[in-house]
Image (tube, rainbow, N blue to C red):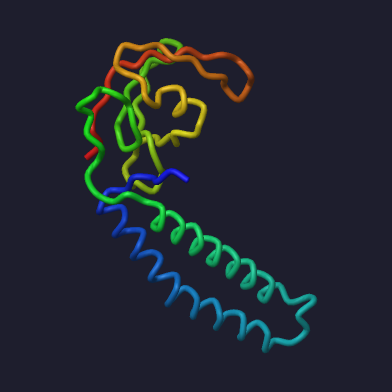
Length: 157
């Protein structure tokens, strides 16, 4: 399994969210479940079922955060010295005449208003390892082949 890249800021933010969910989040949902359970018949108890569903979402997010943090390389973005696009880089491309700027990597890297594409997504896989000036193609979800011209690559900071 490949490691994903996270800034120290992103790792700290995710660690804080994980700590909050594992402590406060879990204890609050347990209180909600106990209060709803005390109301009686669980078959038709909407509050109980809603609390259990919320508990499932919390546990799922905890697993996702643990996995992300356990499989992350934390630090500064990879160097662009060789000119090759890699995760953790901000990429500007031209697709069908439109310029698009995005971050290649995990959505957890940034809280900024910047689109993020995984290196496993069709667009991410097409540009991964490419250089400025190259034209790559990928198959869009609708099945059409799309050409991408790489305009600019820079370290994400």
